[in-house]
Length: 330
Image 1 (cartoon, rainbow, N blue to C red):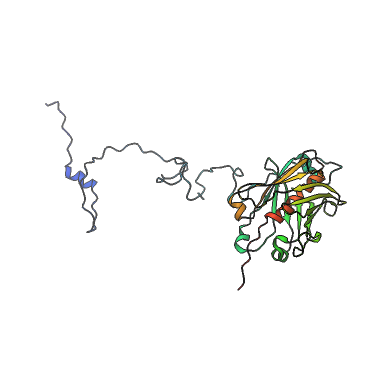
Image 2: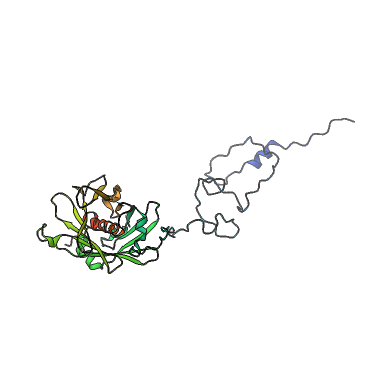
C-alpha cells in the first residue's frame, strides 16, 4: 500500500480561462485576451459601516472621505443623525443676531442712548442692495450699528417714499429711524430739502440734519458750512449754538484710501474724535454699501456722541451715496 495520497484532479486550463473570460457577443467588440489570473479561495467579507448600506465610489461623500462634499442629503430614517438639532444653521435661514447687553437705567440720559455711554467706538455698516443695482430703482437705506465685539447696538432704517427717493436721489430729504433690540424707535434724524440750483454759497443751499432723541425732542443740529476746498460742518445743540466742528479731507473721493473727517473743538485745534469712511476695495467703487468707523471719548456727553453719530449719515448722503444710474429715454 502506497503512502502517497492521490492528488486532486486538476481542472483543465481551458476551463479556468473560460470562466474568467467574458466574451462580448457584439460583432464590433474588441478581441478578447486570455488572462493569467487564477482566482484564489474566497476571503472574509467586510461589512460596510453602520448606517451605510453599501459602499460609495471614489468622489462621493462618505465618512472615509471627509474632504468631499455630499451630493445629496439622506432623507430616510435608516441613516444616523450627523449633527444635533439647533447646533448648525439651517440652509436659507439667516444667522442669529447677537445684540449688545442692555445697559442699566440712567436718569440723566435720554432713553435708548445708554448704550453710547459705554462705547468710544462704533461701526456703521450699510446694507448692500443688489436688486437696486439691477433694477436702477432707489430703495431705502438700511444700516447696522455694531461695537468692537461685532454685537449689534442699533438698526437704522430710512423712511422715505418711493417718489422722493427716485426723483431727488442723493439730494432727497429723508427721515432715519434708529431702533434698539426691542424694535423701539429711540432716535430720529431728519434732513430737509435744500435747493442746489442757487448760488453755492447761499445759506439756503446748505445742508442740515436735525437729531431728535427721543423722537420729537430735538437735541441738536448738524449744519454744513460753505468751503472752497473741503467739507466743513458745525455740530450745534438744541438752541443752535455751536459746540463742535467737523472738518473733512480736501478730496472725499480718494481711491484706495480711507476718508477721515476730524471732529474738533470750537478752537479748531483740539481733537475730539473722527468719522472714518473705510475703503472696501471694489465694493466701495461699484456697490452702495459704505462702512464708517466713529471714534469719540468715552466720557464725552452722550448727547454729543449722538450728534457725531448723526453727522455720519449726513456725510454719507452728501459724499458717498451712489444712486443707480437712470436709463436715458429715447
